[in-house]
Structures are given as C-alpha cells and as structure tokens.
Length: 163
Image (cartoon, rainbow, N blue to C red; front, side):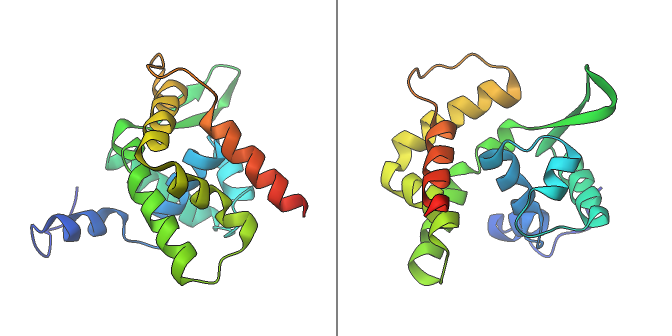
C-alpha cells in the first residue's frame, strides 16, 4: 500500500515509486544483464547493493507490479524474477537516461557502450529489444524477427571491456 502522494503529477508519482537509489538499477540489471536470481542481482551488480536493500527493493518492485516472481522448477529454494510489461516499457526512458549520462557525465566506455548503441539505434532498436524482453520475461512469442538485441549489446560490452 502506497502512502498518500505529494501530488498527482505523473512525474511525482513515478518518482515516488522508482526514484529511490536502487529500483532502476535492479530493473537495469534484469533488463540488460538478464540477472533473474537474487544471487545474480546481489553479486553481479557493479554498484554492490547490500542484500537487505536488494530484498527490500525486490519486494517493493513486486508490490508495485514492476517484477514478478516464481519458483524455479529446477531448484525449489530459488526464485526467478521477471520483468513485467510495466517495467519493459521503461526501456525508452532508460535509453534516454543513458544517452543523457553519456553526454553530461564522465562515464566509462565499457559501461556506456550499451547506452551508446541504444541511442544510435533509437526507437526501432528499442522496440526490437522490448519484443525480445517480452519473450524472455513474459513468455510471449516474438513479433519482430532478427538478431538478438541483448546479444548485440552484450557482445559490444565484452569487446569494449577487453580493451
């Protein structure tokens, strides 16, 4: 249950849900790193989120409908987290945040290569990637055929990281 909002402004309401230090980072890691297990989110994030904070953020994102959780059929003690349509539709916003950060902040080349490719690819690439995310996280059949955007982004990251 959400507390009373400061205002009904859409920017305010969005920031009340996603404006903390970690929520978008968790969504980013699920979206771009395909990190779907608690341990992956905890151990593979560059920002080193604390386990209690990650647990709190995942609970919050579940309550707000940004992620879903199901039991792993192969390992009953593990849960698999998935993005929902609500969070998949954040991709264009994350692409724009990444583009802005590249222009105005001192970012590493390796950690900004995905943002660069998303910026250059624009809305067409975003749609392809969202279609792919829907397949991976929601089990929907892809409407847009072609190369995997996630694989392209990962390959670019790995190539730049080796330099």
